[in-house]
Image (cartoon, rainbow, N blue to C red; front, top):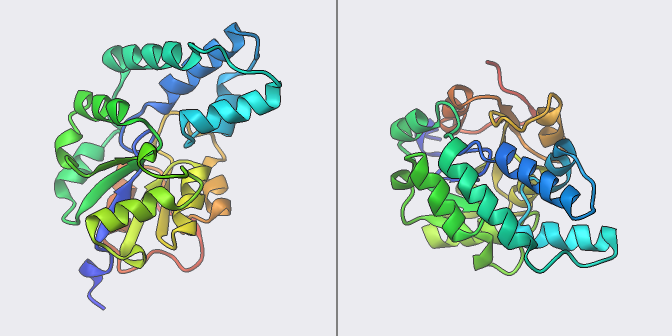
Length: 234
């Protein structure tokens, strides 16, 4: 097997993989939820909701709380997040260089809404690496952890799932990639990743975990990642 040609498509998650946005969004979610009477912390939001769509997060909270969130909750949260993007958002360290050097076709498959995806990628200078191959969970029936979004992305790109490698920072995203029968590389370079996050991604089904863009690049070019799940050697 030709080592350079085993994977034919790299599917990147966006938040926490390409842009360091999960810290911003989780902080704002925690603040707004607490403000309306559903006390929660930044770390609780990271652990419970990273990788999920806003609609899925809202449903989980309402079921737990036993009441509906205010009708303007999503509008307020998204407005605050977009403003934080304009003043605080950064690309994940080293990811722009990796994308410039990566010879494989690539796309984005994210739980975020299309306008938010475009804003984050444009502000960090990453949009041109993917345009027009940026796919949102609003394009499919079920978001992560269902496999629908990754399978949709593979179909749109004309690549068989078995020839795709997914880069994910969330438990939901890893499970979605595994359910799509794709190879999944866990990624923990985002500022939101807690100390044990890599092990949690491995437990969810990631084949290997990279802690930085520098570790990720060589893994994407391997003929296959590890048969036994493990952390990449830095």
